[in-house]
Image (cartoon, rainbow, N blue to C red; front, side, top):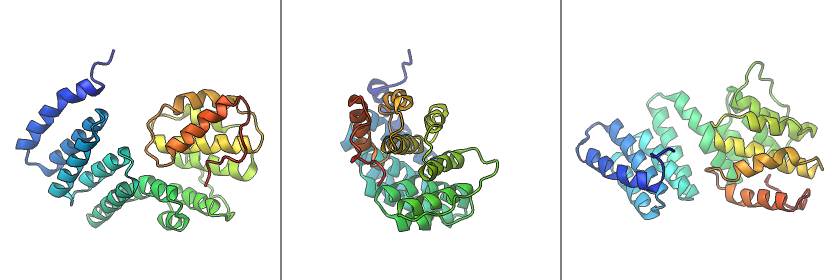
Length: 259
């Protein structure tokens, strides 16, 4: 049994982190300590303490990208999505200002894009996805498709990471063949859980709307519905997935997870 997980373990670690913060001088180490402290109190379900620590961390080191991303993560887990998006955008600005373009783009094409998309801001998504990176090419096609336009999908060559997985979903939306998507989700490693959920939820509902069999999705639904997914759409979608499988059929076609 893993004895290092859960609220009790979090409670034991917090005093040590507080002691380190009282003496530690390194800004980078302090940023990591704040991040850990925020996560621990959230693991305990102590939302008030999390909000307090986020505010303290930002008051102390708002100019550090690591503190902004720690705050963004905390805001996400609190369900404060606008604040999370603002903190992620500030982190992007700070990273870009210090010449860390690759890290800035990683945030832009990850949580910033997803939160912008969840808000229904298709123009914002298209702007974020301007670029020649494989992921940007796929996300730009995705943004146009979600905005109601049909554009040519990019050719990624040997790319076989996140970009190719999202391209597989976009391909399914164009040719209506969802048979390979459950296997793609099942074989996915545990990285990028938010994107994994998007491929699952959107692929499942596309399959339902096309009248495809859903049995291959059922086991995945039981697993993924218990996941922790930091996306504003997750709770509504999770309930829709559970209701779909409880219906023992294809479910009501009027319910759509793809906005």
